[in-house]
Amino acid sequence: MKKRMFSAILCVIMVITMLSGCGSNGSTETTKGTEGTTGGDTTQGSSDDKPYAGTTVSVLCASTPYIETLRANISEFEEATGITVEFDQYENEQLSNQIAVNAAAGGTELDVVLYRPIQENLSFISKGWLENLDSYIEAAGDEYDYKDYTDSAREITSKDGSAYGIPLVTERGIIQYNTEMLAEVGYDSIPETYDEFVELCKKLKEAGYTPIGLRGEGNAAVTQFSSFLYGIGGDFIDLETGKALINTDEFVEALQFYGMLCAEYSPDGVLNAGWEETSNWFTQEQVAMRADCDSQYSYALDENNSLVYDKVGYGVIPGKTADSRSPFSIVAWSMGISSGSKNKEASWEFIKWATSKEMDLLAQQEGNFSARNSTWADESSTENVPAGLIEVIETSNAIAVPYDRPYMQNSAEARTAIGELITKAIEGAAEDELRAACEDVNTTVQTLLDSENAQ
Image 1 (tube, rainbow, N blue to C red):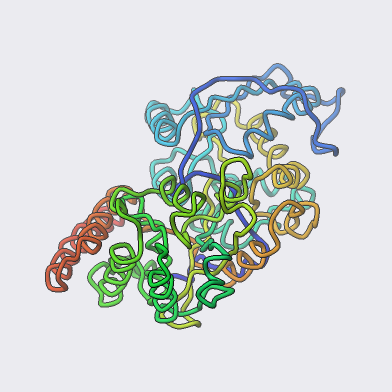
Image 2 (cartoon, rainbow, N blue to C red):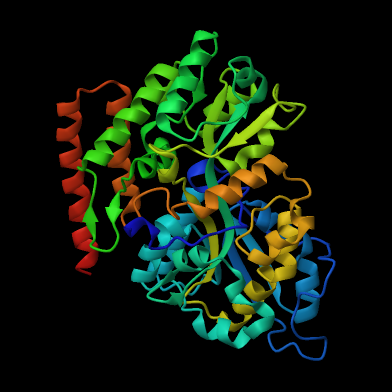
């Protein structure tokens, strides 16, 4: 099927970041690294072999756990290479704007950039803003081991078989649940099918609980809606033909189902809910379940701020049938080189160190969810991750779709239009009204796709 185009069985990957579709807490600042150690030899060269000594490499990025790990250990890289690294950190949208403004002017002021591949990979590559990394990866050889990254992670950061980014952060859609509340109504796990899931919601509501916290704010809801769409057998786009699928029966059915869950089984105010609201509802015991990103799991386990820290379970998002379950599993952030950079070789030296097996393992030990298979194979990387969560992630990855929104250059515009459909569904639009609206949005998305293909 078209939605498996990028999928691979990702038996061992997970994600912790509060970004992408799942939020950001970054702040704007420019800093150099502080003292730290990776606990291993991850740099290339020696004190007698520093071809890029004296070079300053800028890293335009968001504030993510991976970046914080790099900042804490950057002195090791700087001492080994003689390269000075400066981190310029921004909020998500500010970061995208900074990249766009500088790249449109030639990109000479940019070196290394952190970007979001689902919504920016195709656009940045099409505009010529990212350097093709194939020759750098080939020269790095077996020690760097680019093929250690999962197939889908490499695919979503590439185009036409060439790599333009290195995957840093992954995340999936899952369900968290209050084990005590579910036990009270006779459940110890999340059902596999939509019908069974609705039955669980009914029982929770009859017991006096609000069953589930879902994102209902249109734009924010699109990413979480995607798993329910895939579980019905629908999609946003047929990636093989470039045909929009917003007007299909499957899409309309998914809107109706998601809208019903929000309207009947989520808290008041669901139309304004994003990831922060769903997190607060769950941690403060206002809902029995929460469907959102696994990257936020630690909030519910915070003994100082969560009322459910000792009673959290994890489940795979259900499907129309057990075999149709298809949660998203995405690369939230990747690292590339500006095509206009004056310091491309030195920038690659930094990326090679920053994304090495040793640094990747350290980053996961400190909270990141990796895209490298070797990191997940190392038990030290998951010592602090709940066993139940690991099991759900491994199950999800084997059946997942590697995008959580329309995978296209004009993803933001398409997402906004689809978000308006979700709002209509939650508000209870009649089926004929919803189908008519879907036809309009389908035309909008198809026009965008056609314009992209004509470039």
